Amino acid sequence: MRSLHIDGDSMLHRMPAGLKLASLSVISLALFTINHPVVLAIAAFVGLACHALLRISAAEIWRRMRPFVLIVVVVALFTGVFSGVTEGLVALFRLAALALFASLVTATTTTGDFIDVITKAAMPLERLGLLKASDVGLSIGLVIRFVPEILSRYEVIRDAHYARGLKPRPLSIIVPLIITTLRSADEIAAAIDARGIRSQK
Image (cartoon, rainbow, N blue to C red; front, top):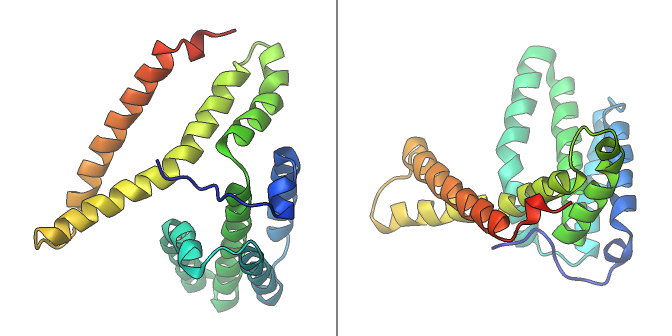
């Protein structure tokens, strides 16, 4: 499976996962309190520059950002049409900065570290009997792991259309993508149950 994590020995790689997630939360809150497009554009540029400091190529940055580009553009255009150009630029740069900073965290944090942090954070709720912390951590880890996998499956289906001389259409891509994803989810769930992970106390 393709991973969002990139091996490295940068300061961000060495930073504890909990601290990175906490910092991302603070940055996210700060971005939503800023309403000046220039400041938000600078924040987005900083996020992009940090990718360069990690020696992540432009192609890799685009691969990581591509799933979010359409959402960011649509939200920005919608906001611009109904609330004005300035608000549209605010939405564009805010979401772009948020996606870039989140990408930095996923690029420098392994899935195992994510699971450990989320599991520890959910322990107080487990003590209250509201949920099982290990299940929450496992669920978050699987979601993070499946994001690049779904993108990879989309590319395979799209390339198969081109190889057959067919023009990719939303319905002809979405249906097989959903089927293959659900099939993989069933296989992973069966593997988890076979190992007794969800039954562990």
